[in-house]
Length: 126
Image 1 (cartoon, helix red, strand yellow):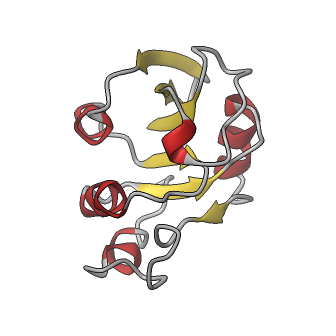
Image 2: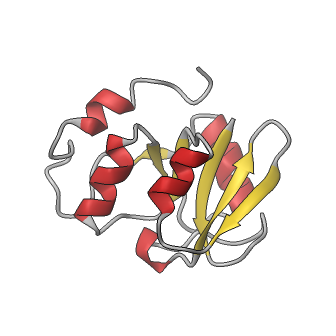
Image 3: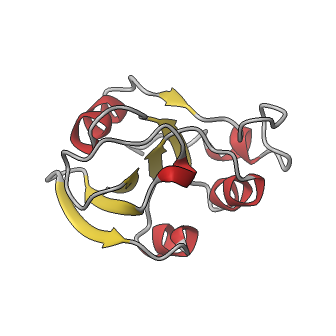
């Protein structure tokens, strides 16, 4: 399975920043092999995650409502892995040890279109 991890460097040791907006790019990781498939630095992250069929995004808190809604609308689960390395956060996600991000900071807690509840119902191992 592919996932995306928002970091500032192109390696699995990179630390996930406190917020998604601080990240310089996305690592696309194949979780079966823990290999980096791609390093995305353009800001059309949602399209790239959809292109790679990412099931999850590991990042810090989200402050951008339209970006959050676009990720949720694409049914990409969001997990808070801030201050962990990309490798450790990926492992913690696989072990169900990361907190689910249900909304952007300042939001209602369930996403304006209900995506947070609708799209997190699939599990990353499904």
